[in-house]
Image (cartoon, rainbow, N blue to C red; front, side, top):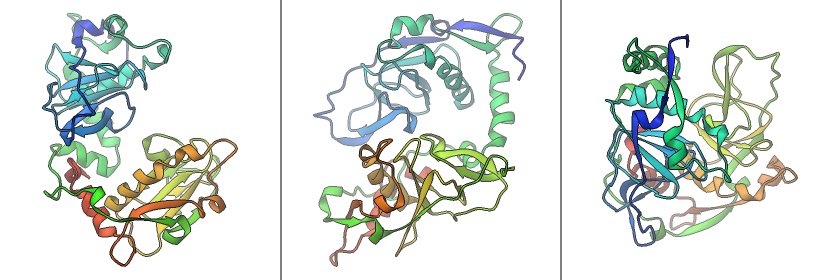
Length: 336
């Protein structure tokens, strides 16, 4: 990418930047409105609330607190935390291609900020980002859109390309609200539910570029750090838990992978682990991350004795169908 025709722009030249309305989360019940906070994952969505949206779609949010500098583009109406994020309304016509380009550029400014140096409104307004420009010194939005469409999206994995080509859907697969509290739950040791095995070592000298996701102990990108053409070690429908590095980080994989020796691989003993059950389970497994540290790694022998609480049927066996249906009943599940 040539950058000799790029020019710096202050964020307040491109956006109106303001603080969102406050919401009483204690009184707000579960609903369909995305609530954006300072989390660096899930497009900034912390939960779904019953309040009416206060922010319009086609906006960008930037975390000023917590995961400082995390930026997300939203193609849906939403609510936002007034303390954790700032809302950027574009002064130009934006779309998802331009939005994802801009959030990537904005996140390059993260290193300037930390807990003791928040990305407040004043600093945000004065922040300069560089963008490709036309001869009249205005951003070349058409070039940006075409670059994302023609250069970046074609390089994405197949399932990600399909997500971009379709309209993002808010509707759930099952139009029935299911409640977790209405079910009986029971504790199970990991080794009663899962087959657990350590991944396989692959040195950098043995790696060859390809299409197979290589999973290591990272905390982002679903644990994928490279794409290789070596044989897969695990078929789709498995979970990985990082045993070193980002210890305890859990991801579900709906595709064949090579699991490195920095992760453990979990599959269900008595049921197929589809993407809906997988997402339900990794949410529970991620709650256990606090148990791990540098001196307390997530090795196989230790994991076998850990316990997970699952919804059960009348015979006290895990109710896999309920778990699947619960995920299908959530907003946006039709995009999975």
